Length: 437
Image (tube, rainbow, N blue to C red; front, side, top):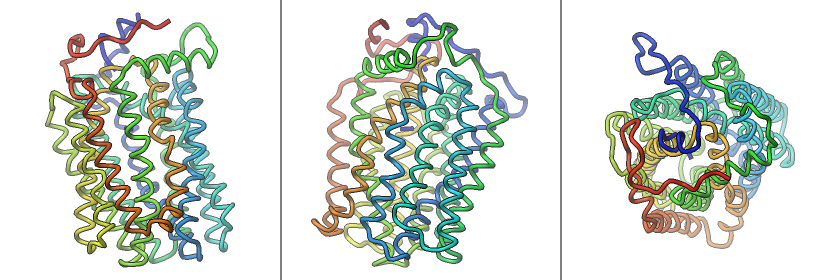
């Protein structure tokens, strides 16, 4: 989805030392700056790659269902390998895991780019190399989350997470606009090649990261035990798994809209890749603009406020369902970006407060595994659903499901009650999880 003081001590583990001050950058540690810069670079390529992949398929005579199959092929290895990635990230230096994952993704995207540039790749080739990029992400993501959370102190968390997301989201604006324009001007193959180059540049930067604290226990324990302990940390917090359960369906719906239905509507009713790139750029503007707000706004009920942002996730599906003109679609995408940042920053603060640092990557892997668990199925069934319900009917279904889930999660008291607290203060609004083993 996108680590608390008291729960760390309840597990007998001291918090890692806070990052030192770095002159004029103040609160931003060296690791924070490097990781943010690398995320911006890789985000530039990643924002354009889905647009390029979708139009490589559609322009080659493929169907909406084919777009869904390729997207599912990218997501499936992510789901299958996330837990291994999370366990490794808590046992090995996280920056080493990220570098290896970035290099692997660069090779996969480079091979996919070569296939598209040389000729018309077959469906199985597109699925194979998309799966390679998904496997790289499964190892990168848990390590990335752990690295960024341990690189900032709790008192600066809201500012740091907002700046981090603004950097990433700013890359989404430029990457989506550039990806759409380049796809229309020179073809999707060059956009995929740019993505591979961005992965390599990000890997080079992340090689410079330094671990803040040991990420592996002194005594070697089996990976299965590590995963069991990570599961305990995850399952003992009801607010955590309830929201992850919500996102398992929500991400499948949003993924179908953004990866399958949006490009199809743009090709049939709008101006193709260029217009869809503009819509995705408007989404990025919403992400960045709200990041400025979240750097200053510190709501007390962090998950309650975050979930109000989730209500905006379904707005683009509504706009696409009614065949809204491009300006209205861009406004809908902007609002969706607002919602994603409101939720994302508050979610990161909740995780930093509540999850022990030494278990964070495993918990993050369970979080992402649950959130993505239905995404391959959702994108694979997006085409058949559009055939059965019609494109507008499928979009209406995604919008309604998103709104219903946003309301349903508020029935959980812990989601409504979890509160921000000053650094060093013990939790007094929720019960502590049971002792580990």
